Length: 342
Image (cartoon, rainbow, N blue to C red; front, top):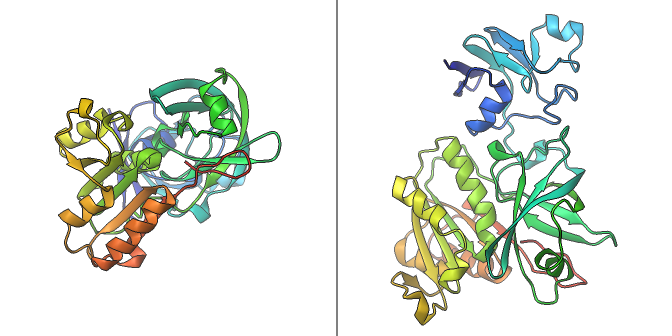
């Protein structure tokens, strides 16, 4: 049996399953509430219960004072509904509302998605969770003080592990380590979340996503979040790559398209004869221009190298795109002396 939960004053509704905390239910449904430790200790997920009943089965609400309990305050990470609820809390709507912190992490799993793309899963300590908005990025802090930046490829409702898509860069010391001798369980230190690339949920406009290479990573997270929140705005995904092998998770957007929730258009710029490619070819931003003569009514999210982002921005503006509706994650690949974002 599920319980209906209403957020006041916004009126947003979601449902919690039996034995599920309010916070877990919110995140599963794409609702971004503040949280920190998820162990009822830090108090970051504190909010007011306006109606209904809750109980704490697994966690003791040590972050609540007796006065707060008497005033109806609850900890959403531990409180489980025992009836339909109305709660008073503000959703996290921008990156400025999230605290940037440093965390120790260990490498939980390495998964080679393509010859030059590695999916890296990072695990935070059991008592920690990093709150983030889908599309943001983290810095990996190297021992010599340098940083390497990588976009988060997972959505907040799926935050047990941090997912990164790391491309091998010739001359890149860190990526050489990732593809060479990085062992599972290696310890790293990260800082995050960072960046302003995230879904503007209150916009009514349809969305065009444009990804170049591993720029698919943050866009994947944003789309997964949008699907969890049941956003009904039309969504179009254009993913540009050199050859078919570079569409390293191609079955995922194909499945979104088969469900009718995302319109997916892959575009190859240098298809090989062995690809037997029957789809679109050329520059990915040109495919968007060909399909949308007037871009004035769209929100556009672009993830990829700066040259691609810059070309897309200029071309889209010339075709009616409003500057304030353009959001991007542009990253430079770094060698030994520079910072990177991917």
